[in-house]
Image (cartoon, rainbow, N blue to C red; front, side, top):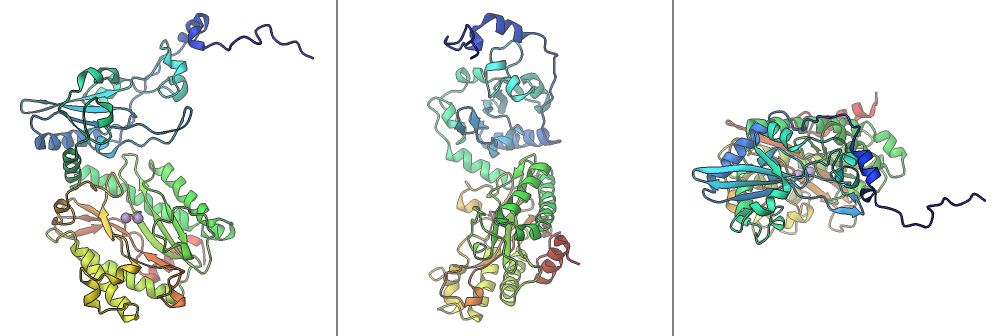
Length: 471
Ligand code: GLY
Ligand code: MN
Ligand code: MN
């Protein structure tokens, strides 16, 4: 038997308490300069966003924070994704960073507080798994961040003494500051300001949509393999998520892949079923760009390359509602006009099929809504840094507002006939269809950013067959 080493049985030492070790590890490192990674043009866009916010809150100190990823276990944390309003104001995605816009006469002074990386010579270099460069790699320092962002950047430790009692804080920032409560007034104003996208943001959204379109193609190309796999929905989900991670920051929301009876389930994110060849396959997927702007697109494909008669009938009605909705997107219409237009088509179609227990007018009235049994969700929303962007707004600023150039929104009517819904004929049970496009309101009308993907049944069949590699 091998003899135990002489130090066996002694309490294992902490590295930071061993002078020989700390001295040895402090030296012998080449100096590594790391530039912050921020999307081109983002710092200029963020500075303009701060100016817009500043004008809304004269004399009021404002605080926003990136947030902190929750711990999963010990020093394993869930993936970090910075708070959207913080990113809108800073273009910075550093975990734990805090922006204070200090009120001064005639405006605000922006100061960004962030944790400095632990470098060789700091104890945290080898002992701090979150900010030690031995653990997370060489990282940009505060001076480099100040350079890249054009704002004053200070150590996070300075924040405590700095931020005072009457500041307004975002939801993410409030817990960091003693005595400061989260301000719904600030959240609402940020939501409202974020509704109108500037040229740089529109460029980001176009990029996110383009990457999503290529992600749809990559995913559809895997349909034959997904049919062959036991859990083909997962295979497709994984395919899109890998694409999103490679060409963007990742999926902008939980990817939905629903085959057959799963397609009518609105948030089918379990994706643990097979891909059935003769069933309709609903794909709701969006790439979030590195700038964190996201797309949100849905197509319903025939997995085999050909829709059944019932699937096609459902798709045709959804397409008609979609076109009616899109036709309402232009400056000056009210936000809900697209919703009313699409719902009228849906209610009439369902009535023609004998599915409504009341007249179309009665169903459409605010005290009816019977058609919504088959479409119980919203059919559009603002889109931007969040998939459901600007959701903290007042009703009057969102649902009750007029559309303006620079708004980006989705239009996404659908029909959802659940497999166990006894009110629909057997051929429609287990059929779910959604058509979702991302639309920019322009000066003269609208621009469908996701129109590289077809919306008509014939076009979708041709497109699906091409991706599947069918002759
Ligand atoms: N994918 C979420 C939505 O369509 O709203
Ligand atoms: Mn959506
Ligand atoms: Mn969607």
